[in-house]
Length: 360
Image 1 (cartoon, rainbow, N blue to C red):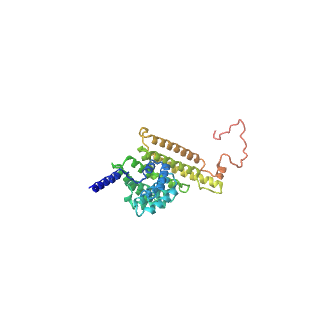
Image 2 (cartoon, rainbow, N blue to C red):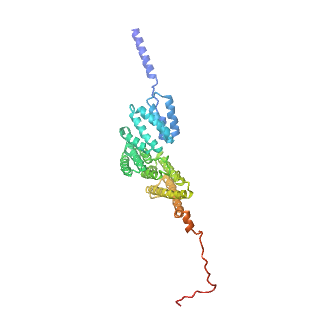
């Protein structure tokens, strides 16, 4: 009996120890994920790296590496982000296809930023082939809009038009769903309108304008929604894009010639063409401007005021070019106000003498 009582006491003691023992929960990337969602890329990068150094055997390790890539992408470290995405894809394609597909999708952003539109299209289409691992906002709206933008940049306007229709229909569907929050929609619009001018030059200026024109409406929609952080991010992205285009228009990198006169004339011609493209882009953005100031939020007022200033600068630039485009230096010598030439000796009319009219 004493043996039984002792055994029962031992069992009760063990149960008490088990019930009082702390529950061990595997560490996750929640804190880093939140920093990434708040577009605090420096902080999220730090947190993802810290997680990886502490929990190399965690089942969330590859998710942390994916987050590291997204943080680097947000900081515009495109090449480094691309290498991480490749590693994540190769490491997860068999066992964690959802993470692998996300990595593949993000690769397309990096390839575009690095100027390789062909690979950007290929990786984007490959990720859509595994769309069951992507969210609805990506498959229905973001990815089609980005394909439209990429096809516009490569002068494939028929495909661009087809995909922009798909993207718009997808966005309309998402807007009617109660399970899609305003924040999710705003982020989707931001991604739909994102375009990189990281590799912009005089050679691809017109294509860059075409790409932006095809999707900038979505950034304007995100601005209008007034949902943070994506509305402010959208305004910042649009302003940066217009600044990058303007700087290229002014500097005209890559246009060179040993002939000073030919170079000057060539720069004038190209600059006038680019300025016209730039004005068309501004006119397209103004189509989405609310008709009344009271219907615009502060971000919209700030952006459209900025756009009006850039439009004025561009118009002034074109006006200045109008008087310079017509004549070469040789033409100016022949036709200008001050030009060399022979002057005939003409006998002046006598003073105070009126010529007679033979009809009088």
